[in-house]
Image (cartoon, rainbow, N blue to C red):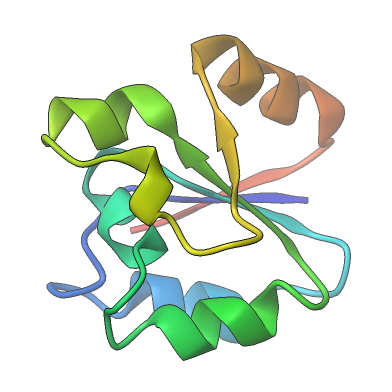
Length: 100
């Protein structure tokens, strides 16, 4: 299953709720304002790091760059994808759950 998060974790609890309910082997894609949960030095870093032990977490590079951020500040273990990678994730997973 692919879980998508497009809201900032500083404004909603979508990221925390998603990571609590997503199962081992599931994938999580952070895009739009959801990318803010992917960066080192935030209060979400330990949550993400723990989740990476059993889940695949991705961040959409064009959304990182559009917000003036750099991918070298992304938490180690998070995979970066472009738009084609986003499409591949949706094709590779039978179900997509959008967390609003």
